[in-house]
Length: 115
Image (cartoon, rainbow, N blue to C red; front, side, top):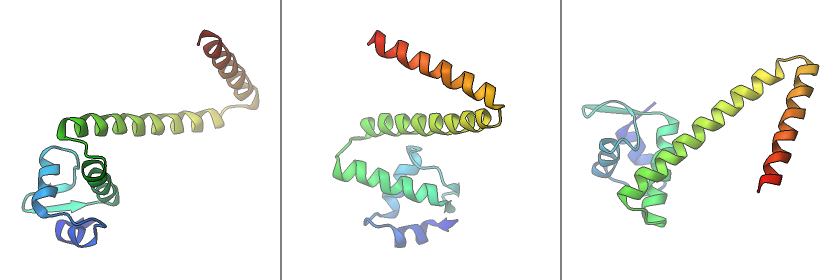
């Protein structure tokens, strides 16, 4: 974990304490601790970089940022869910795995025909 001062020194983009604290207040980034001492994990630092990119390069406003970050959080949540599902399927017998593949193939075909 890194302190706010360490994060400010290592960011690829020039970002100030007030800007980071604003992002924390908006709950766009959620480090551990409090105003007396924030502690950032690597994921928090990556999220700060992403927020800076979206805000500065793409010029997403605050309302748009709320939506964009919410959608990204949902996407990452679904990705984690699919990974757990994939692991659970991998633990099944070859017969069950074959049945699941067949069902998925049928569902994909039905979906394509419905489009």
